[in-house]
Image (cartoon, rainbow over all chains, first blue to last red; front, top):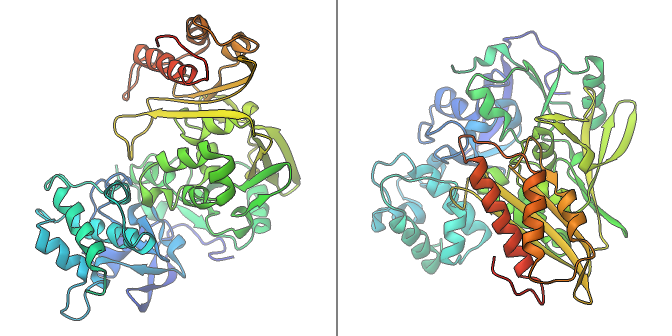
Amino acid sequence: MLNPRLPDGTRLEISLTVNGAARTIHAYPMTRLLDVLREELNLTGTKEGCGEGECGSCSILMDGFLVNSCLIPALQANGTSIVTIEGLANDNRLHPLQKAFLECGAAQCGICTPGMILAALHLLDKIPQPSLDEIREGLSGNLCRCTGYFQIFEAVAKLSRNGVAD
Amino acid sequence: MRANPTEYELVAPGTLQEALALHASEPGSWLPIAGGTDLMVLYAAGRLQSRKLISIAALRELRNIEVASAEVRVGAGCTYTDLRQHPVITKEFPLLARAAAWTGGIANQNRGTLGGNIANASPAGDSLPVLLAYDADLILVSASGERRIPYRTFHTGYKKTLLAPDELIHSICMPRNLSGYKCYARKVGARNAQAISKVFLAAMVRISNATIKDIRLAAGSVGPVPIRLAGTERALAGQPINDSLLELAGKVMAEEIQPIDDIRSTAGYRTVVLRNLLGEFLQSLPGARFAS
């Protein structure tokens, strides 16, 4: 059993892979993964919007699945592999999705953008050439209050036409 | 007020047996948490009463979908994504696959579980009317054994269930003999995605000789628990499909639901819309010709 009965307020050692690198942190088991990423690992690209799983700004990939990191206790992330927005660009070369977002004007204030890009990455991983309806559904858990969504859909559609190897 | 993580205990047993043993050691004091899509919302808002939680998210024993000849047994830990992707669920239980697709966005579907939806016992849970319509049974498990109960007896009052303090929901069993049934489900919410339902209707019917042989109607968000509209079913069973069907059904239905006014809708709206959904369903039956 992981975490056999510890007294309240004891931090645990939690090991996970973040953007390809093995990391070990100490956190309370109920600390939100979002806070582990932002405060323990200084990965502030993952944003907190609503903090209740409605807006998607804290979306990350956990073992390849899109999840809201505000709803995950740190303990449940032990042993998993996480991808955050910081893991997409390769050195100084942007990921094709990041480029497509820039080219299409798919970001304004930027709060939703990291989660939106990870949701798009997850979608294209499952459905390489999504229809507009599939793009809408794939991003339906990610709210944007600036763009009106059309530029975002366009960026994802552009990438599905060009392929991720662009 | 924000929750303080130092005040909470969370443990992750490696096996179902260990989880049940811990649950049995202090019945009622450990709250199981799976995908966290409901509980972590309460937690973040500082409204989670339980200070001790058992994580059951990683228990493989709860994650199977077993296809037997007479029924399909879905492990309580299966996510909405698991349900949407399973070939037998999508083919034979399309209402469940559809309800899974209507629950939250993709990120929540990747985490939220069918067992969690049942245990959370919200009258607005999207999969619940569907499970009622499919005449599902639940297998409940504890350190001292397991028992099987009809799902329609499970919810005993608002957020009250038959689950004993040392039990977990193990699996959900749905009978497979559904060929010949026409099925229907519709959720009405504020938007298509990420919305909690204002009204939900799941329905199944078997017709022969233009007469209703068997009908099952289950509704969500129109009372303290998701319900089978048993009175409406009785009124419709054996009826020929004709012009007076909807009037008859609408009247009985209005008497057996107990909708309320709340932040999402009003009792009046819910009654009218449920009647309209019932009308849409009845209208779709072969031979139906009446204005809804």
